[in-house]
Amino acid sequence: MIPESRGESPRDEGREAGNPGPAGFESLYRPVSIGPLTIPGNLFLAPVAGYSDRAFRSVCVRCGANFTYTEMVSSEALTRDSQKTETLMLRAPNEERYAVQIFGGDPERMADAAAMALERTGAECLDINAGCPVPKIVKTGAGSSLTRDPERLAAVTRAVVKAASRFGTPVSVKIRSGWDSENLTWERAARAALDAGAAAVTLHARTRAQGYEGKSDWDILRQLAELVHRDYPGVPVFGSGDLFSPEDAARMLGETRCDGIMFARGAMGNPFIFTQTRELLTRGSYREIDPAERVSTGWEELLSLAGDSGEQAACREMRKRFCAYTKGIEGGGALRSEIVKAETVDHYRRIFESAGFFLPNP
Image (cartoon, rainbow, N blue to C red; front, side, top):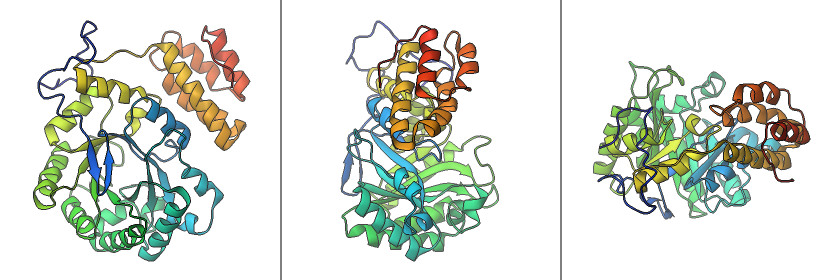
């Protein structure tokens, strides 16, 4: 039985590795396919603006993420040869497979962006963002605006699918429940995308009006999974929203029967959620992550990010990320008071080594 409490975990330190967990858990972790692409497991890193750069995706892969998505990439910026956009799409060295997510409201521009993204990255999947609730994205006809406008979503999807077909690359679409509680358009949006050729659909079961507040309605995700499994056999449904622990992951997979899950905010500063979730689903228990492993993983991310973005930008970005990595560890408050002032890689080293952590040389 999947635990109801999100704060308790069924850890069993005496359980031998490889010994199957409670009945039903083992069936929740499984391979999935997006069109011709087969992925060995169903634990994904969601596209998170300002966070899922290749440095973070790399540590998530090392910690057990089966598939990763880039930050959302503007079709306008990409087709105008923005260097920043090129950086967003870089593949991490350990990413055997990943997806580039693009956004925009113009079908022709999105098709051009799709072709450029695939030419430059060789990504194994393209994802269309039809869920971002940020006003500056929505007002351009992109993001959540597409969930509200299934006809335009169909046109965009059809154009991207046609462009991606030249590379043999499948296209997935991420949607929201709707615009607000009075306008739940998830079914029309999902059908529009799938009828236009999308090979998978992801639902963040909040409305655009909710943003990231309130609760994600997993019952809508369950209804979507039932609909797609019945009317579009072989097409997977992925779920996102309120996944902050391995128990949440098990509950979502078990209660909604979706095919896979995407960790977003739950993975920020905690890529170990992939390690722990895989252990829970395959063994019925999971280990705690010790402070040394948390800090060393953050250090790995810092060095990688510095190589991509430059030392100054990386060190400033890693302030918030290290604050997340050190949450809950003994002496974390004192560490964070120093972390928020760090300016250089060497400054971070001094902070952590003075607190008793050993860090390898860059």
